[in-house]
Length: 202
Image (cartoon, rainbow, N blue to C red; front, side):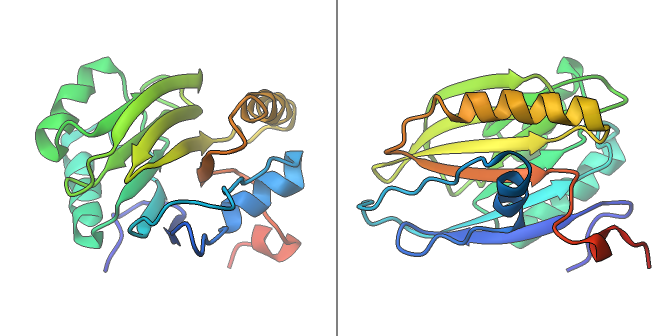
């Protein structure tokens, strides 16, 4: 399946209460700021979710938006975390016309940052709360899916050292306020690497 032209890092992870897969995003947070991925020991039965994260490198324009949404529809993902959306409030209606009403945004400017979390049309979670913890960089959705409360955290970390450190400190403090008995799913672009070789360009 081809990804949208000009896209950045893309990954897919399957999550289920009996076998949650902790992807590279969780590892990045653990390295950088000891941020936890919490999973309740006794979770009710739930259909596994297929989650995807994609740095779009800007998807405000109509053509780019259509490319991204077409790509995501083909994948059949349950929950989608998008980063670097480069949007503002004026673009939201167009997104909802193309995708449906299950789209949640946190904007920065039309030239940088911005995140969005999308739900598959087949997934109808009960949204318990939405918070722009760090506008344009950290969006928190608290939802109930088949009796299980899940905290979905969409992250786009800064690239510069001082700003990145401040962001991780804010995020770490926020995550510490979440109920430890609820599931926590992190997705996004953390702008860091696990190994030095990952920094090398081919």
